[in-house]
Length: 220
Ligand code: DX5
Ligand code: ZN
Image (cartoon, rainbow, N blue to C red; front, side):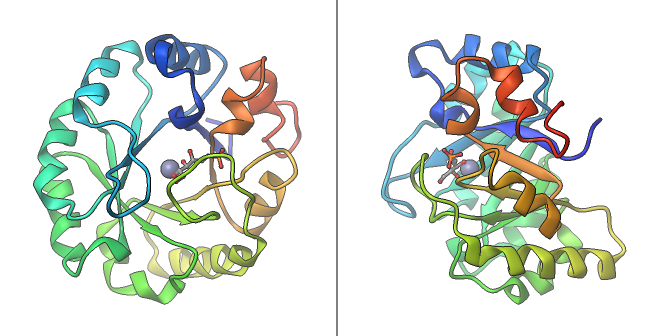
């Protein structure tokens, strides 16, 4: 697998053809499929739920990276795991019992991940580092695709990269929001090894070329 990994976000795909849109990025070299789940409560937008994840599951063998922007999360973890989520990411801001939720995700057989909103400092996740396989830094405020990359988040990526190194654990560091050919190199230089991109992939006519443009050498 080439580094960084590319995870196209379905939020920017054609919602009338989600299955085909997954197959298209899989053919074009995507590493993960990123699915954004929004509840109209934790974030001011509503996307789709476990039934859609389940319907899409047979379309690819690529890992489903399910980003839960919902609160509370615990009542829905089993549904997303059963729907075929390989990785379930929850927000540190979504409730007081993140530790329990992450343990529950692991017990359900999925890989747990933790997400930080732009206003949250890196140290906020220090006590759950031993429970996660993925850390996701939001480089926009969650809720919508197509927003501008927040450069203020770059030092946080670097700090989390140091925290991961000190943990001695194999943890992926992902960025999500406003990732395009101009901002991807900034995120990877800061320490990110997974790039999540919605409009920069699905907003382009050629998905393979769009993903190649996000990789450091621009060539895939
Ligand atoms: C935002 C979502 C992102 C979104 C990214 O709340 O978490 O995954 O789809 O979209 P772009 O890449 O267009 O900023
Ligand atoms: Zn996302």
